[in-house]
Length: 229
Length: 229
Image (cartoon, rainbow over all chains, first blue to last red):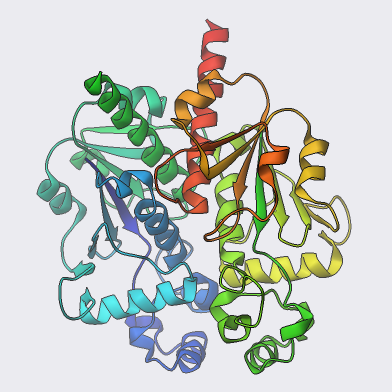
């Protein structure tokens, strides 16, 4: 089983200090929502975000969207060997059931996340597909999962990912940074047993997710084949 | 070098026979564009699309968007070993320079494609990053590329993709269907030397693209390592 954790991801509601900014208010009006219930989105709220600390990297639901699509539609997930977790900059944890069908359309995805931030679980009744838990930092998430966890970090030790995973045995947790550039806000080095880098220059989140999903799948399939012989 | 061709992709302008449908006209008004210049999009034009042949699978720029992001941000592309080509249901061919930065935001991506359908090249001056050529079918595209081409097709021979690629030598072309479900409209079996299936149930386009990009990269990196020894 692979657990993929998107850490320090830039997913949050519009913070109080910019809720009255004209760019936010006009977008909220168009959406027919109160500014406090709107997901922060750099492609719409850029003018307002200059006032925010780390404003140049925040408001990236698109990264979370692509990450979730790649994970949930992966072969690994289809085989029941993947757990997908999203941790946000504000220590909110989103757990996603493997059978969840994430909207392909970005606008609908944003609506789904706004719903989740409001209700804390989606759907509201029955077994939830998505749940949101507040006040849980990355350390607590990794402790809950247990076992070895490996951070993918451009500052880590350079490794060939296929070779690295081939040497690992059993369940592992891989931690990918869910932000467009810069470093982890969480002290991943303290929580993870290893930090590895898989390419000499920074990669996009979806590129890293694809590399991990496919390579971990290859290792599992090889093990299965040799066991069946 | 890997050439990835997205074939029969569901990318087109709104066809003349539905340009006067209320759903199209209202969307065009909101966008401030004429209906004829609008990209067909099932998430907005669904009510109008029932009148179209194969209407249940058409209008999927989101698939092309994800495909382009995964290709252009891949390690393989960063190393200069990938060529990315999109073929559409109407035999239009989009060629994308490896250094192109595709907008992450879906709305901006749609704007870029609409621009491309209008001007046939983007940017309008200087060396183009994207070009669009009409009246060229998949057969002609594959002949231009030359060499072996392999179709990824749920109806093909079941193969382990990593093993399959490890046995291939030199440049290859892989053809992925750019539609949400159903079969290739183009007779891929006539043009491709092989058809392979990599999983017993249908996969999303982005899942297949990720599998091909990562596994082809692994093969290339292994060859390079053994050469450097």
